[in-house]
Length: 311
Ligand code: GLU
Image 1 (cartoon, protein in one colour):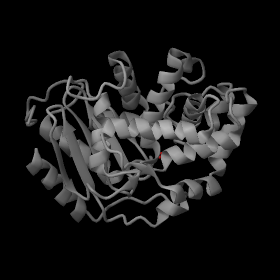
Image 2 (spheres, protein in one colour):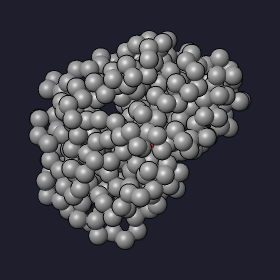
Image 3 (spheres, helix red, strand yellow):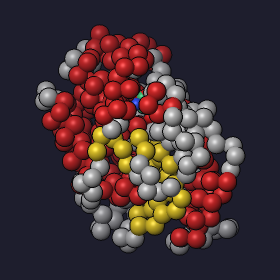
Image 4 (cartoon, helix red, strand yellow):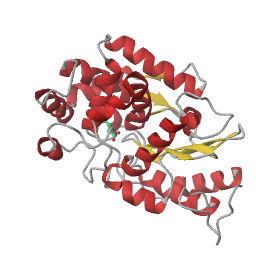
């Protein structure tokens, strides 16, 4: 496994075709696209990594996984009266479907749905308290108290987040926000500004790996459902393509990070800041495709030709 990670990282670091770094959040525009890291936390308790796996990056929409777990912890299945569970087939920040579907976002991983999730875990408490709870959840999942929010990134997104403000106002006009637009947006942008390294993110994803040694932060049923949503909706309009190429549940962020779960086996984090046309890490996706092919890991069946099964 270590050899495979090293090989993948070396190939990615040498690849000149790196995709484009997100620029709509000014603070992210200056990140060096030459970086690539990968880390894996196995069910057996091992953590292996390669490349820039100890460089912190902005997890952005990967945070929506932790936010969803927190919101479900607050209100359980009542969440599904305010947000759907279907892929949208549209970009992460699309406004299109909201009007047609009366302010009920398609799923918790597109921005509109994530704003409802944030509003749900806010549930009347001051943003600082709610964010404290989110960070405590992530720290407990990763077993690492040094994980924090990058205030500069949060402020940078708040200052330029016109699209997200418009989504929030539309949700509010449909009666699908309880807190004020400013509170929800402020909390959401701070949540997205959580910073982690690949190593920390792989550790934090362990609560979604079905294994007795992993932190039990959510019930088995909830874990399966979060994984199902990651598979169907975790890469926006590139979700079908990611499922086709990788075959494991994953959630991406515009910071270039992807969290991938191999149920029963491992939590994997990959990061490279350049994005493909769907807004997902280009080299991260390609690396996961290679990883899945080489290990034979897929939720859709065991590969018998070439994949090496449980390394
Ligand atoms: N904070 C970002 C936004 O709302 C998250 C998007 C993403 O990571 O895909 O635009």
